[in-house]
Image (cartoon, rainbow over all chains, first blue to last red; front, side, top):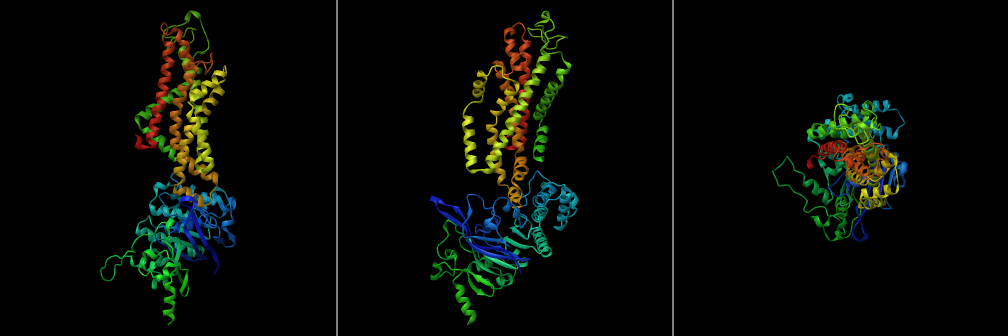
Amino acid sequence: MTTVLEVNNLRVSFPGPAHSRFCPVDGVSFSLQRGETLALVGESGCGKSLTSLALLQLIPAPGRIESGSGIRLGDTDVLALKGEALRRIRGRRIGMIFQDPMTSLNPVFTVEAQITEGILAHFRISKAEARDRALQLLQEVGIPDPGERLKAYPHQLSGGMRQRVMIAIALSAEPEILVADEPTTALDVTVQAQILEVLDDLRARRGMAVLLITHDLGIVAGRADRVAVMYAGQIVEEASTPRLFASPSHPYTQGLFASVPRITGPLQRLNPIRGSVPAASAWPTGCRFRPRCPKAFDRSEVEPPLLPVGPDHRMRCWLAEQTKETGHG
Amino acid sequence: MTAAFDVLQSAWRNPRGRTGALILLIVTIAALFGPVLLPDPLAQPDVLDASRPPGLGHPFGTDQLSRDVLARVVSGGRISLSVAFLAVGLSVTLGAAVGLVSGYWGGAVDALLMRIVDGALAIPRLFILLLVLAVWERVPVLALILLIGATGWFATSRLVRGEVLRIREEGYVRAAEVLGARRHRIIFRHLLPNALGPLLVAATLGVGDVILLEAGLSFLGLGIQPPTPSWGGMILDSREVMISAPWAGIFPGLAIVITVLAANLFGDALRDAVDPRSA
């Protein structure tokens, strides 16, 4: 397997009071293999979206990526790029789709103009050729009657259609990696499934790697090869999807699973994680989940590193040492 | 360009807007083609024909120099409207450029430009113009256009900057950035077209303002110089015959009122179309 993306100790900081800086993304590392889907799961405010924007150096000012962070796209050191070189990888190496297809399309231009924008930004081809490619892309994302749709304006399309158009746009420059930031959050459940189907299909056909950012474990289950759970700016647990679903180990991950309503089994109260994610300017010391953790113990006052829990399974919790010992014993 | 087109269409559906647009259209056509059909506005056919009341030969009468008032109103309109359209075109372009730069780049560039605009807005426009024109005798029309245009973009730049700041946060701008769209493309394809609506309002209302401003300057003898006819200049000339031949001043005065009113009606309708809340 070839690694297409490697993120190493990514830290994104914003200015806080009195010249201090705080880090909403604080030491995130992960890698993405060709043809693989990695899900980045976590609550709102845990740093998922900032992580994805950092991949293309699109952190809005006054935020910045701290030195010591590493983002490698194949052989390219993304953080060393500037200006034109940076523009060339945007869309070309990494494509992105966003949560809200309603606002991600420019209301004043036709679908055709918006899809060809990406093609013309990266390839030296004629408008007619760009149009043909746009037509193919619309077919590829499953839009019926693509010739007519090319002439449509965004307001003439449904939410699901718009998200398909967004995917077509993200694919227009044939990126190796597609970052899907909550791609289905704004859509109906039935449309959600279709969009995920399209993404999965494209991944398989084009050998793309997909970084699926979501807060919805249900989406992860069928689609992702691996899952990284984020909490308070860090990855707290990482495992293959079957493994994570079979034995979620970090108390936070367990809490996430417990808070998903079940339709089978005895009727029971929902079991949410108490409290809410602390503000990025006030991450707790020690284990960041400690104030909300039902299993916090004395060692939690020291910040745990990512510790192995099993094969290809790591978590940021001191309990990993016990789990592993009992596993062996 | 649908945003601007929608705004125009919606303003057209508004009865007041349609009235304003139609009057503006008629005045513009008259100014464009009228001078060809009417007698020479400078010709003084006969001293005995001076200060004739409106009648068959001269629908608006003649002035004290026996020139046809209708011909002069129409040909003065050509000058006044040219000055207005060109000066507004200039100030809207400047305002849009500064606003786009300021809003898009932000930071120090933005702060500097906006402080300049703040300073410029603190000095009344008429004051700056009076100062320059008082020194500059017999100012050419082109210079007048440039002066009026160059002093009219400050508020527009603020407006456009505000729009750009809003549009910048829209998903499609982020999406274009993610896609690797070039900077000029983001500015001219995403920011500018979506800011056209408010810009159109500012331009239309600006036309009315500039017609008044130019008429005022010409009335003071600082704008369009005689013998070139202009509405303000005609009113200036007519002061001497205000009682004996009032038509020489009434008709150019009416022309100013009707044109400015039309521009404001249309501009207000456009504003309602851009921002229905303020209707």
